[in-house]
Image 1 (spheres, helix red, strand yellow):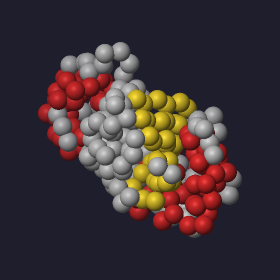
Image 2 (cartoon, helix red, strand yellow; image 1 turned 180 degrees about the horizontal axis):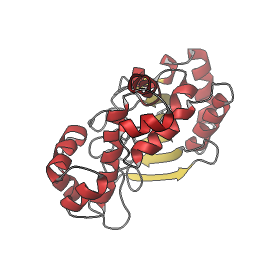
Image 3 (tube, one colour; image 1 turned 90 degrees about the horizontal axis):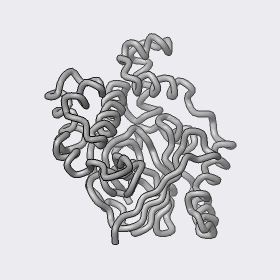
Length: 264
């Protein structure tokens, strides 16, 4: 069965995306700086932030629903620093009391739209959690726009060590790695438009085409040419990762969202 992916912005959880994927997984999961709350096969799981590609199908299942949080916003809600979940997928019951998660799973089963259930779960939990680090949004926005780590540190008024520590808790890795991941996402989007590699490198902020190729290999496990050939658009742009282990062309179009490895 062909994979089908759909998503929408959440009106209940600021900055979050609600997504649903059905069908067989495709290519590898690529890093995007996000964390996801997943509902699959009657289980609640968490996909942590990735640092590299992960193979498809790490969590078995034919129907996945997820809530993808904006970078830096999930740790406060989950009650655990992001770096503890880096490159992992864990049961929500490993993070929250098992009786509570069991009750939540029973409640989730009653939703015709599991994504709506995940939204309400997250909104309810947020009302009882500490607010997320306000610095995280400023850091992510600066790095996403291509600012250097030094420039971002100056804007937020932190020294390099403080920024690194706060970034580990918020994003799962330091600001340099987050900047590389967000730059990769810019490059993936440009590559999916079918732009020449030299133009992708320039517009995404790489030093040159060779730099682009090295970063693709390191973070995506492929080359820009291979990625463009596999996921060049025939219509809408395809996305770049799936916590459920789906197509590398999965975040915003056909097959799936962001994710990580699994302990599930």
